[in-house]
Length: 356
Ligand SMILES: [Zn+2]
Ligand SMILES: [Zn+2]
Image (cartoon, rainbow, N blue to C red; front, side):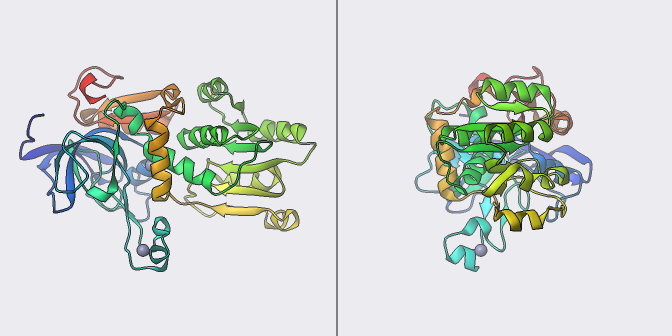
């Protein structure tokens, strides 16, 4: 493993719509921290919001990237060894507020994230506190390991409800979070999991995964009602975060059923609150994940329990960062766009062997 040079290449977000490659100093590694050579960084809607200047906290200049895997180069943290394969749990919590005091630091009043508020993974190297790293088995595919963070989001959304064997689960949106949430619900024994997703490629993939997939919320609604004698889904996961989805949530769900808001709404959206009154439905917000959720996600990946290799990935080098953001925004070609900062330019679409 070659020692890193004094500088590294990093993708720096400069202003809305502008990200460029720069040679910057290697990050410092304080006591208790470790230096990681970044392997794969997933891009998601949050990154797109930051890139476009729509995130409420992110401030330029910033090295983005909060979903990543890598290999430890140097460690000043007990329990983390050089050559360990790791994924990052990117939360930064204050330890002072009521949520932190009660062990719910994922809803810390002052919650911050690496890659949003502080430097993240879109660079050749990244430094993190050892307690934010989860060690993976040596034979793990680091591309799949980069999905551990969004998978933890899906695990957390499912942890908000108790899924029974006869339950009918509806998922709005078949992007990465929607598909992962549906896969976890399926793994937890839901009787039937149905997804609404307009993109045909994603819909076909959902069907291959054993999910029912429909092109619109209308068609999903019709099937839900057929399956349940007109009642509706026991649990509805909103993984779209779009006002048009918000308007439908209560109608898709049975009386006393649960609605989980897994997607992050960028703006206030209209909801039929009277319908929620009359049907005594539970409307449940969820934010990121607890440490236990991350451990479960890491466990699912380590054991190869979910067919995550079926999710199509599109890998870009760091010098292709603008193409990577364009592909993530487009969303049509792959389920997930990954950036591999340690890969040099060249072959498009695969990761280098030594990073697996
Ligand atoms: Zn994300
Ligand atoms: Zn706190």
